Image (cartoon, rainbow, N blue to C red):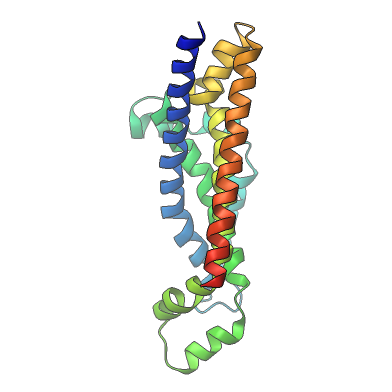
Length: 217
């Protein structure tokens, strides 16, 4: 019995890793530029634009304040349009990425705000263009903080992926509900919790290590 469950547990772990990995890549691809735009268009930014900044802030805050379960339901039409279904691991990636991207954006914006204004002013005095300031000054200076923030994003997505699995998204959450809760298998529930805790610990340790290396560099 445990041999079969071990195989199912391993497959569910792979599904969760796939969901988290794919949604992280998408969220980072959209969230990092979003954070940069929020920063440079904000008050005293190098490309201050109050209207654009306000509109983006409203969208970001609205998405971040919506509970993930509700967001998944709201995004069902979008998910079906993109992947053709609202059930399964591929369908779960859509709401996971959309939920994480605004969070990543705020993290990047916060990290960029920690960069000393004098560094930007020095670059501007030497004739650096806005793109040069972003790519060669702001992002390198904020890199350790961005890594620490992205680590939190990955950890949040691990929790979201388990939640998505509980409503048909697959992965460890789906396994915990189908085998652990519905069949009263507390050993399966315990195993999924242990695996999720181990994943979080690994991601946090890896993120802390990379952040320390970035600060020393």
